[in-house]
Image (cartoon, rainbow, N blue to C red; front, side, top):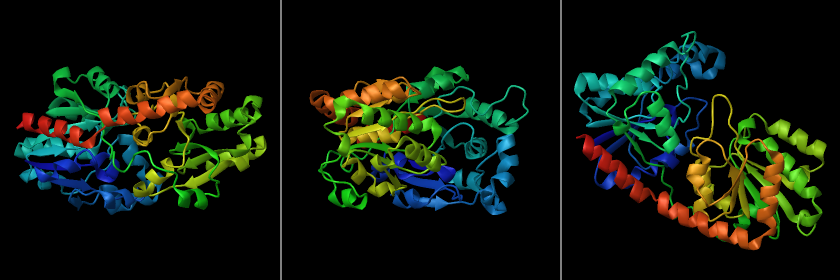
Length: 394
């Protein structure tokens, strides 16, 4: 089988881990385009043969300015890859992601011209996202989504919630299969604390570390984490650990300065370490230093947690996890985590406190986490399932 995986500016190592095991039995090529607001670091780590095409945004220099990109976003036509349709002429299957991208629309056009089968991976779990009933915006996206929904041969939803969103939008149940994203279980696994990382971050070996990995944005619940941290540091039951309680934030985002200002106002800045963006191929080292992982995401009007690769990374690393009942998080984590209500700093404080003080609970969550990762997110097994779906199409 000859398969084209099309991801535009979203090609990344973590998703491709589920496809790389097929390299011995399938002819795979990953098509991508680089745009300034996406990094190329993770693209370089992808082991699948890659081919770079230019996007309209790239050719016109629109990646330089959000203002110049606005008209494309308004009509909902983003990431058109120049020459893609002709490239797909020789492929058995084209495999884009999401129903609303221009490159998914291009795959349907290639199907009409050359008979190429189309399988679409779907992360989106909000029905009718990028659609507007009155057509004042996203005019093209409405058309693209309908065309892709009607004419794609297969939809691979990464969660049951993504499947439900497709069904609400009119995709027949029989055209949808649910296959999650796999994780490199040899790289992400329980490890001794990485002393080099501890040293670089200015931490001590005996610190109790709560790790956050993600975008420093409001919707990731980072402010709730700050308030929960303040409450933990005021709690007399935790006097035995306060001096060594540290919060490590790995990632960057628009709220970084706001977070630091709040931490300073609360008088707890010294308990937080901002590690910044880290290369994906190094990120497993940061999980090794943690005692607890937390990412208290909360839903907003246009987004809720779609999957959360960091949750699988944390589970595979054998970490106890405290997170929220938001989006697809409960489906991904199952019973291998403590889940609390989103947008609730007090509940987050209570959940973190319980895991901190209860050694037996913490140990049990560690075991459940690794077991769940092995049973549900093995990339070799997931790769086999994807290949079986490909074979069914041909």
